[in-house]
Image 1 (cartoon, one colour):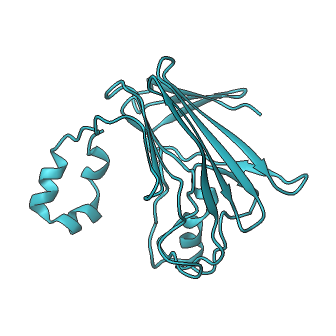
Image 2 (cartoon, rainbow, N blue to C red):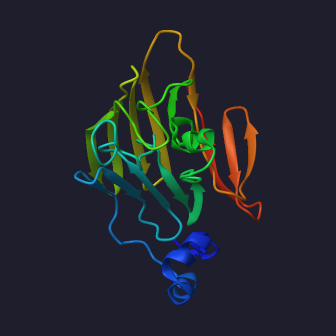
Image 3 (cartoon, rainbow, N blue to C red):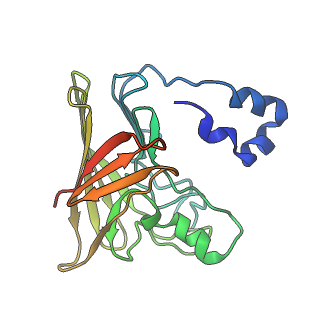
Length: 231
């Protein structure tokens, strides 16, 4: 991983000051040598292949929804089980971020919403009860169903129960030999409901969609990854 995504970030400059910002801008950061890990207390999971700089890195939230009880969690977004993915050292699937804390209400709500994260949900239904631009009401609950590691391969499954009546079980399969990351979803909701899946990609990438296969090309139009959708 490098700091090139941060290098032109004005907010980082204001936070660090010119001297530290310049040191950050010119520094190359290498990932921790540990492999995949589940932080139970912190509610975070990291999936990492062993091919340094050329493999897979995925990070996602899988614990408590946020700080505080119902009616709080002001900094939380509907991003449970929504992975940020680096593929062969390139940022591919991103978190949409905050946009701004004080802006048009609809923009603030959009960037906190389920649809602005890399997940799947019934159309128009949120992971939690969004009360205002800074608070949540009823919160989703997440639990670990399985975490298994063998020869660097990882199988992990989590279940998220939304207070809005739906349940999502998401499984991640990291295969070291094949260099693949597979994500499977099992969903329970009202019969006949329409489900929407969402993926948010890093700026500058290019795409070629043929049938159920999406080819992702980097900024130089070189093949980066292939995503296959199955029902």
